[in-house]
Image (tube, rainbow, N blue to C red; front, side):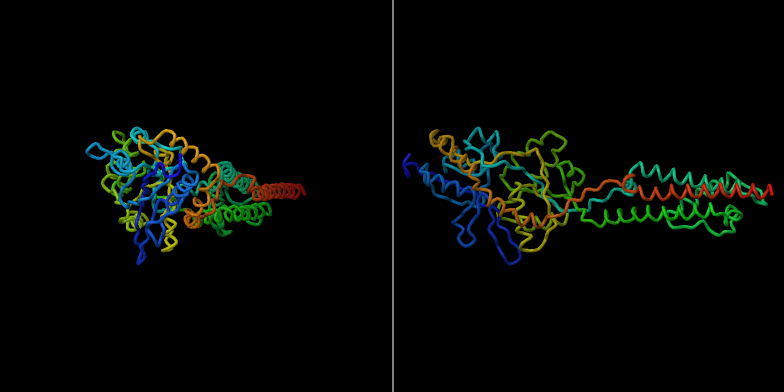
Length: 437
């Protein structure tokens, strides 16, 4: 088809005018459409490059018209389509986009071959991740906790045997002694000693080499175990363990006072209508009560999101772009995104149903070449780089310490127990020899 024989009127959706301090920036659906900061009638971006490629390939010529508040389009209260979809149906424009593919939209307009796959995300503030009251038990594995308990019992039993068998001028309380030793070995973990040598269960065995070795070995074992425990639990709480406040739609049910916003006439509104007549219907109602007009109030919305008073639903890359630009201009970096699969879909340029089939095939062929050439990659990376810098963190994966990690501590304990038993046997032998002599 010769250049100019089919002139396509294209509306591009200009989005989100954000006021930050004294600076007013006209934001767009970056990286698909990027308005020139000096001349808002000019634009570049992935979609504009695609249209330029179509022009160079003589598929069609085009003119651009930017609308600040049109929106993608949903079915309004009157049962008619509004936004860009409505403009296509009314034959006011020939092409538009990009738009999310949707079954209802596909019935009234034509989609070209998809440019990309995209997700909707929840923009929310960040909260501490470590609120698990049982975290202290996760530092050691179950095997280690079992070995520690067994070690306490063994040490208490050996001390009781030493107390019972070694000679004494006073009556012995074997059962009471065992439980006293059991308690003493347990409180050693918090740095408590056995107490004065004049205590009844220590008095006549305090000079025994076997008991001295047992006590010294046990305190050394406690030192190793508690040092490892305190270091791990300190690093767990001190590390950057922040997570998004809302990680799935169901989380909103626990916070009925939180506002949930999105753009008017946008795909999130259209897609989330499937929540009607489900347990999540209240989320849809809250969303429709707080629709945001394009180019208005997004700055205050993001401030409320960071403060934990609200959340916002949008497309992945543009959400990252908004957060990244806010970070670049204000230094604020306490917003994160969380994907949810219920509204994942493809993004494509669209046309009215009357578009000639030959032209549609050429457009599809052009999209394929455009994607295979990787023309969008650079602009995609540039659009999210500030968010990546803002949210960059080292993902630390922690596992409970197991026997292999603490083998040295238990090796010391086993060696000490063996030496204590050996000394105890030597004491018994020496006592028998002295009695015979």
